[in-house]
Picture 1 (cartoon, helix red, strand yellow):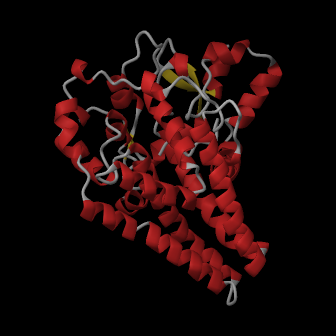
Picture 2: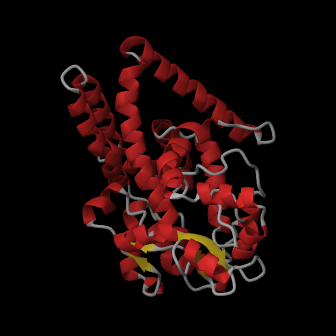
Picture 3: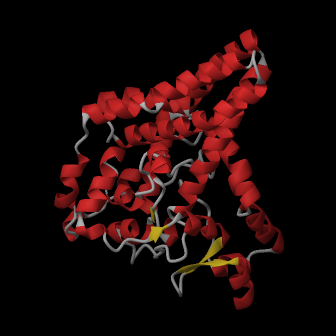
Length: 351
């Protein structure tokens, strides 16, 4: 999805424009996928009507339900989390400029939905573009992805750094603290080394969030906001972080050095097709079809399934079930020699 980015929201790596050149002439897919890149206003409006509007409606209902039952409010957090996740996909597509037909429409809808998912639009868009331009590249890791060491890098580090890496890659940190970091904390941090546009995006978003949350605190109390917003964000964030994780962290995921790296191969072999039940596919905005999205980020979410079904190039992509995705949590380090991600047990056996 990725980037529920809780890794590095303040770094300024090489320009995304300079590194995200897919070299379409070297592959036969660019012309074939172009028809699926066209946005559709009816589909876009349907997406907004089935994401942003029900999410806002459920938030209001949850505040009113606090006067009746805390447990009823917490129960409503479950569907609210689903619509928050779907709202994130609308924001994500706007950041790619694929959701609406015009740049201005994508910008303003993106800014609105970015506020709802606690993200500074320009900063997130910049970091996520770098992720698309470097995914699967061993020499350009660390921007908009989950930090992943190679076997040699891990075994050569001091024990304190190895312990810190194991702690970070533990499910408790990755899927427990990770959602809070990715939504609430990480996006609030800025650096003076950042471009003014991305830094100002963070500062303005922080100011607007402070005003809105402060008003809720003033009129309803901090407890009300915590009971409504935190469970919803944690549920949506946990699912979102897990989906982002398994989209690039499966056993045979593509990893190559820069001189051998290929944009198309990284998309087709390094991005999974996570097959979800239809209800979960709906709430996740089809982002499980991640191989299509990474081949062309200009394909809006409502065209991803059709592109996968109709284009022969997608017939041999890595397919993961929900069970496969849960099992992938055990994978921790890259073995470039075998082209596999390894578990801690496999790393220990090799050592």
